[in-house]
Length: 96
Image (cartoon, rainbow, N blue to C red):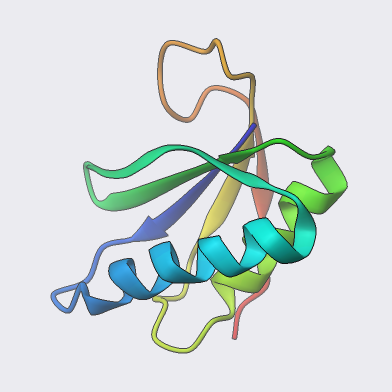
C-alpha cells in the first residue's frame, strides 16, 4: 500500500478533484483506493493499493503534480496491516 500525504491548505477544493482522479487512475493503472482519504494533522492522506509498488508510486507522482494540488506531497510505502499512518519508507514525489 502507498499513503499519499498532501499538505493541507486553506483551499481544500483539490481534495475532491484528487478523489475523482483516483477513479480514473483505478481504470488506467489497475490501482484501487484502499480506504477513504482523511485529514491527519497538517496533511490529507489518500490510500492506494492493488498494484505493484512501481505502479502505486507512478499514481502518487501523477497526483502530486496535478493542477491545484499543494506542493510538498510525499508517499509512504507501507503495509495494509499497519496500525498507524506514516509507518514505512518515505518517498519524495515530484514537484509541479
